[in-house]
Image 1 (cartoon, helix red, strand yellow):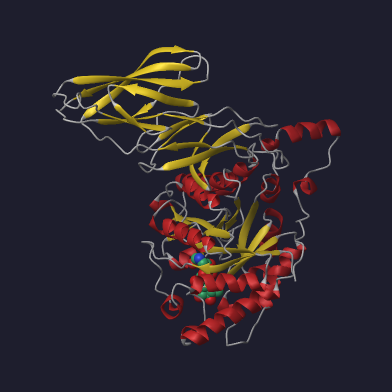
Image 2 (cartoon, protein in one colour):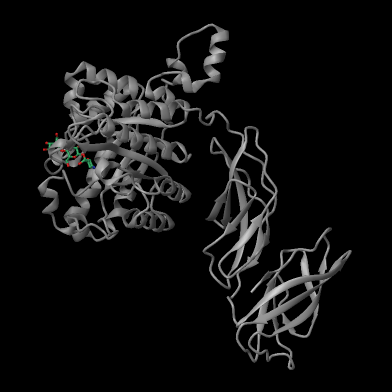
Length: 547
Ligand code: G2I
C-alpha cells in the first residue's frame, strides 16, 4: 500500500525568532548573516543536513541528543539497521536499535536514511555460509522484512540497498554476494526493496567515489545500465570518508552533476575528514575547507539532496580505531565544542543561495544555429531564455544525452563522433534548478575528416537578396592527383550549382571532388572552384564549415 510522505514540519521559519516587521525584512534580505542551526539553513536551501547516530549515545547522553536533534534534520543509524543488528540469526529479527533511531527522528522532525541492506561487512556468518539458492532467498526475505517494517512510516525515506560493491579499479568486489549470486544480486536487491516499499528512494552507496575516477565511473556505468533495464535505482550515495593526507578529490561537483544527469538523486552519505592527530589550527583550517568544498558541490547541483556527516563529535568516531594516529574527523571536538569545520558547513549553507520557493522555469531558449562543424565538434548559438529570477546556464542535449553546458548563449561542442548525424536542442536552467522547455532542434552531421593533403579556404564573392556566390581555394602542401572537400552549412542555406568541381549532397553537407581536368595539383600549388548558394536571411551569408 502506498502512502503520502509527510513534509518535515520543523523548517527555517519555525526556528526564526519572532521580530517586528521592519526587522524581519532586513533579516529576510540578508540570510547569509543570520546564524541559525545547520538544519534551518539547509532547509532554506532545499537540502538536508544529517548525521549518523549511535544508539548508545542517543540513549545515554543529553548533550549528544541535543545537538543531534537541533542541528540536523536527517539521521542515519551508524550500526543499528545493519544485518548483524536486525537479523543476527536466520529469520530472528530484532528492531530495538533501529526503532529507537526512527522514534528519535519522529520526535525531532527528521528524516531517516536506512543503512544498509546488502553489504559484505557486518553481515552474520550464517549468510555467507548459505548456498546460492539459500542466500538469494535470505537476501530477499531480509529486505522484505526490514524495509517492509518502515514502509508505512513517513520519516524513513530512503535506503542504502547495496553498499560497497566495487573495487578501487572499478571491477566488482569479489564479495560472498558476488561469488555466490553473480553480479545480478544488485538488480535483485533493488527489485526486492522496491517491492517492499514503493515510495522509498533506493540508493547504491560506496566510498572513494566522490570525484571522477575509475571506481565512480564504474558506478556511473552500472547505474546507467541498470536504469536502462528498468531496475529501480533512485539515488547514489558518496560516502565521503576523506583524509587530509590524500588531498581533496578531483571533480567532485562534475561527478555529482554526471550522476544527476542520469536522473538519480545524489547524496553525500558518510562524510568525515580525518587528519593525523593531534589537531592544530592549520589542519583544522584545511579540514574546514574540505567540508566547505563538499557542501558547495552539493549546493551547486539541484539533484544533490543533502549531506550526512558520519557522526558529529570526535568523542565518538570510528576513525581512530581503524586508522591509528588519525582522527579529529568531525565538526565538533570531544567536548562538543564547535570546530572550524562546523563554521564551514554553517557558512556554506547560510551563504546567499537560490530561493527554493522559486518554481517558475525559464522560457525556452531559441532554436540553436550551428557553425564551424568539424569531424569532432561544432559551435552552437542560440537566443537567450528569460526567467523571473535569472537564467544561470544552458545545457545542450542530443536526445537525452547532455553534450555540454554553457553559461552564455553559445557553446563549442567537442568530442563528437566523425561522420555522424546529430539532432540537438538547448534547455535553460535557473539557480533554483528549474529547467525550461526544450528549444527547437537543429540537425548537423560531423565531417568525415580531412581526406586530401590540401587545406580549403572560403571567400564570399558576391551576394544578393535570396542568394550568393561562394568560392573555395584548396592549397596543397603535398602533391595530389585528386581531391575532395566538404562544406557544411547551417539550415536555411543551400548550394544550388557548382563549377570547376563535381558536387554531391543535398545539405547540410555538400561534398566537392575534382573535375576531370583539375585533380592534379603540385606541392605548394592550389586550385579554386565556385558555387551558387540560396539563402533567405539578411546581411552577410553565413560561412560554411570546411573540411
Ligand atoms: O567504516 C566506516 C563506514 C564505511 N561505510 C559503511 C559504514 O557502515 C561504516 O561505518 C562503520 C561504523 O561507523 C563503525 O561503528 O562501520 C563499522 C563496521 O564496519 C562500525 O564499527 C563497528 C565495530 O567494528 C564493531 O567492533 C562494533 O561492535 O561498530 C560496531 C558497533 O559499535
